[in-house]
Amino acid sequence: MKDFWDERYRQSDFVYGDQPNIYFAEKLAELTPGKALFPAEGEGRNAVYAAIQGFEVEAFDQSEEGKKKAMQLAEINSVKINYTTVSADTIGYKKESFDLLVMVFAHFPEILRRDLHRWFSSLVKKGGGNYSGRFQ
Image (tube, rainbow, N blue to C red; front, side, top):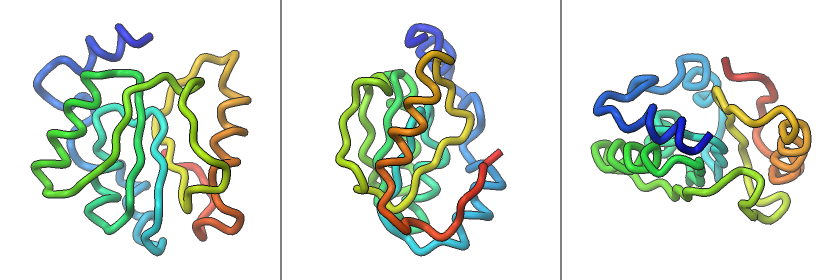
């Protein structure tokens, strides 16, 4: 899948645009800034928006091309995001180290999806964030 996403993100335009998901932006406005994790973040539009809103952002994706565009978008918007290029099943974070977990159009292999979602949920601090829902 890495090759698929690298090829998709290699084009000069942002595949999903450079503006955040509308629903995500609306819900983010309800939260107090903290430390946010963005798995499978692709080109970074949502992570960059969170950074603009004052969140400390950790993001990752398996696509190097996605990371390049995310870092470019962060630079354009004069914000910093920490972005790692890695597969979701190999990255290591400490449990309860994030205030917010954001997955918008995150695509994982079916065989790993349930375990990854459980693990990602364990990375959020008890009581982290004040919104529980699905960003569409």
